[in-house]
Length: 219
Image 1: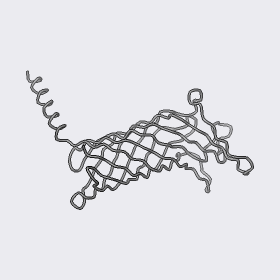
Image 2: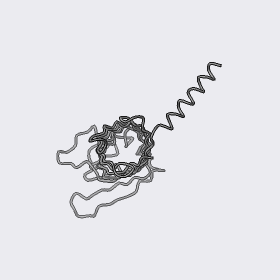
Image 3: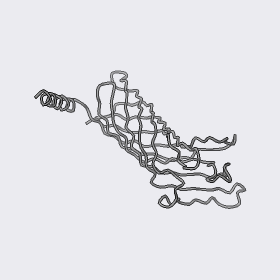
Image 4: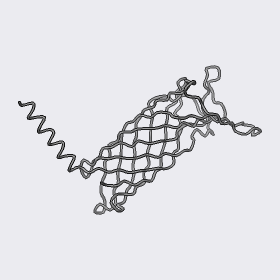
C-alpha cells in the first residue's frame, strides 16, 4: 500500500512539473572548423583543419529561470587535413591529404542561462555528451607539385574498415541570445572533443569548433 501511494504521489508530482515546465524547440546552423588531434609531430606550416557546416534541431525543457535540459539532433561535417599515413610502412604525413567526414549526431545537453536587462538579453552556457554516426566519407589528395588536379574519392564505408563509423564525445558551448517574438534569436560558439579515434590505425580524435546562429521558440 505504501508503495502504491508513493507511486501515485510521484506520478502527480511529475505531471505537475510537466505542466509547469516550459518546452522550447528550435533550429540552428553555421560554420564548422574541424580537425583531428594526432600523436605524431605536425609540420610547422601544416594546415590540419577542414571547413564545413552544421545544422541541428533543438528541444529543451526549462527546469527554472537558470537551468534547462535538452537534445540537439543534427548533421555535421568533420574531418582533417594533412592526414597521417594509413599504414605502418609510411606513418608520416601524406602531403595535402584531406578527410571529409559527415556525421549524424545526438548530443544530450545541460544548459545554464542568465537573464540580463530584464530578460531582453541572455548569456548561456551548455555542456553535454553525445553519440555520432558517420554517414559518408571522402578523401581528397592534392598534388604538391601543382601539376595534377586534386583527386576526391568517396570511401566505401561498407567495405572499408579504416574508419570508426561510431563516434562519441564531449560538447561545450557559450552564447548570447535576444528575445524576439515568442522566442529568442541567438549566436553561439561550440566545441566538440571526441574520445574515440576516427581512424582505427592511428591516434586521430575528432575536434571541431562551430560558429552558429539559431532561433529557439518557447511553446
